[in-house]
Image 1: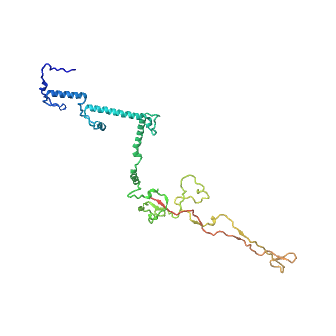
Image 2: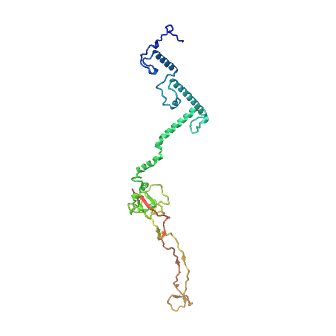
Image 3: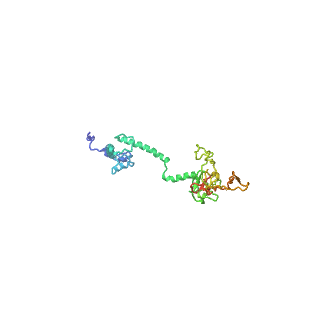
Length: 352
């Protein structure tokens, strides 16, 4: 609409130049108390026009401090509404371009290697791939959450092992482990070591970690196993029927119903007569002969008697003679070896 000069027929009177503004100052519009009305009008019109096109509106509450990316794009521009709107439009266009590029990439099936994912159909869509990733992530998260209770970090291993050994009494006061802790009580074991770790009674020295371990020498309530091998007890031991080789009820195994603590056996043995097997000896016989005595009877007495009237007389018995038979002897009555192949060790036992 064209402007009409309402004062066209009113001469050249310019009343707005002579009218004073008496209101409060308006710093945002540059208006002060006492300004000419024409200046106030001009300031209002200018502000209105810039508000209409956005060039004069500067939102004071708008900030880009939390968005460094937009703040970079806004460098060198005044914080007006029009510039903010343009920034949003440019940002939206940039974002749209990025989304289009991502969609294009996701739409290319050759980009994904889904070998490690499960439950995916052939030619899976990006959404299906994403869902499979999320499913595997959730599974992995559960597993990772359980790691603190099912696994031990290497850096914590030493301290945890030390705590366990201490709680079991294997370590106490020092790092010397007591060897007795490795042995069940009353179990006898061979020891192939130095006797200096025992005192003169056979008790283990605590300074050597042998407290509670004793030599089986008959002292300290231990059995005297010096020079002895061990054999399994039979008496009162539960189990299935014994085989013929160890059954003490069989005639070939007399005296073998061994009870705990029984001692028996010998290193060497000399056979008694009753222990020898039935046998024969060779006989040496050189043979022998008998001599018959003969002659003329000169008297009616003596060892001779007459036969008929022939004048020949014979003895009534033969002369004494020996056969010369001898029985050969054998053996030397020496003791014989009664030991199995063995190696000498020290027997030890844990008592406490």
